[in-house]
Length: 223
Image 1 (tube, rainbow, N blue to C red):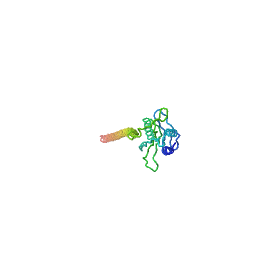
Image 2: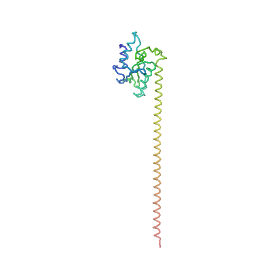
Image 3: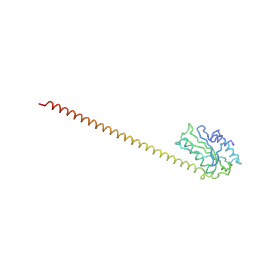
Image 4: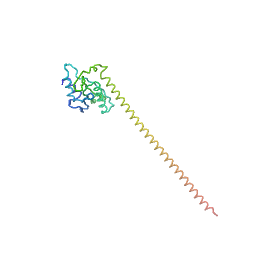
């Protein structure tokens, strides 16, 4: 593997090139390939990529840098990164390596991003490297549109999920308020019942006292 590609892979992916998936220093690394093709370990893939080129100044990899929303969870960022890489591989018939990075401790803590390194050649069904993906050299026809579309779709899905969650929370709040109102009604009914009982008791006592006094008066005034 050439020194320039090796150093770039070490900077972007890390030194452990032998795994399909790994966690290392706050980043997620994974291999990807077009549909129906088995992902290859980075070292194996990129050595084959360089061996397929004849010219010394040939481009052997294409890098796509993807900004990831800080509001997403780590699992959502991994899913989005892998989804973008897989969509690019399926569309253009390529393979590669991705690395999702977390922000540096001293840097902007919103700087979640991913590096997607793609082969510049399509993979044949046999696994051999075939023709160049010339259409990706054109800025207008390149991967930017695909990445933007996938990010927009993800944002819409996230917005829908957030809206559904907000609706569920609102429904719970309404239920709680209804329950509180019912409790207040019961409490008011209880207070009203207590007042009625207290008033009836006072009336009964008053009537009983009045009756007793009348009986006493009758006894006193008897001839």
